[in-house]
Image 1 (cartoon, protein in one colour):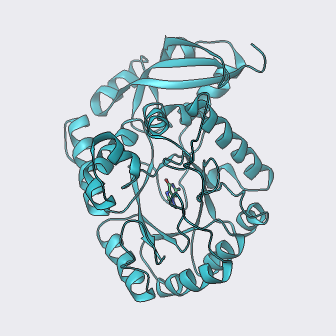
Image 2 (cartoon, rainbow, N blue to C red):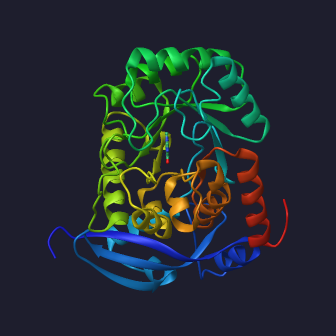
Amino acid sequence: MTDAKLYLRPLGFLYGDAADAALNSGVALPLAGGPIAFTAVELIEGSASESERQLLAATAVAASRDRDVAALLDRVTAPRPPFAGLLLDRPLIMGIVNVTPDSFSDGGLYDKTDGAVMHAAELAKAGADIVDIGGESTRPGSDAVQEADELARVVPVLEGLSGFNAVISIDTRKARVARAAAEAGAKIFNDVSALTHDKDSLAAAAETGLAVVLMHAKGEPKTMQDDPRYDDVALEVYDYLASRIAAAEAAGIDRARIAADPGLGFGKTLTHNLAILANLSLLHGLGVPLLVGASRKRFIGGVSGGETPETREPGSYAAAIAGAAQGAQLFRVHDVAGTRQALAVWLASAVGKGS
Ligand code: 9MG
């Protein structure tokens, strides 16, 4: 096999007292330094086009003398530092505020500054740790927005949020918008193009000190759902995100400021989205916190019906739980209160007690 790479997919998860007991007796390893333990690993060697896979006990992998395996396992198990000042010791919720006329899920209700500011405040009250303010729709089929229009949409909202009690994230592909947001107090640059769309974005992130969410997308929003193809979607998304993390670090963005996101729905069919969710734990090998954005997306309707975004809320909770069960740390959602409740009930039942 030429150019064979290594990947580790943690499996066999334990929670609560069972995780503590397994960690203390050395039969499991900690997932991303958090409270979840894993007992098994799929060791994958190869590439997206050709790979060999072995299922091993986590302890057997920990005993490996192979330096590459040990380095990768270190990244899978190491504790993650706080992201944008937020501790990652529980699932964090990023609430969505679309400041776009054609917002795909709120029917444009919040396209006015006051409405958007009020909505952000409601999301924070409902328990959002982060609010993500976006002035460009990147849903499938949407057209790009001019920089001046995007600035005019988001800057007044960001200014209206000064003194706000949740971390502010700017959802943009444009360096100037990110710089303006940083000046107005934003702490996170959420870029669905992983800092590739604008040639100044890497520098903007490095210079402003913003934390960054690097998301995988295949193609541009306008055409990305036109027959996307992969040999192995999970490995290709992994490789892409690894290359963008390397580019960000090379530009002077500290790894502690980076989160990675597989980009559900961005150039992916239903099958691709489900494969990503099923293999999500693989992405812990990137060594950074993981963000999952499944909320109200079309693939949820593809699994179980749900013609309109609003009818996909129960499926959105289920997707968040699927991510949390594999140790994802951040969840980008429309319904903050509902997701909080779903995650709290999942966690309480996984560990056998409430917090
Ligand atoms: C802006 N946006 C829309 N969907 C998203 C997703 O899944 N992740 C992130 N980070 N941003 C998204």
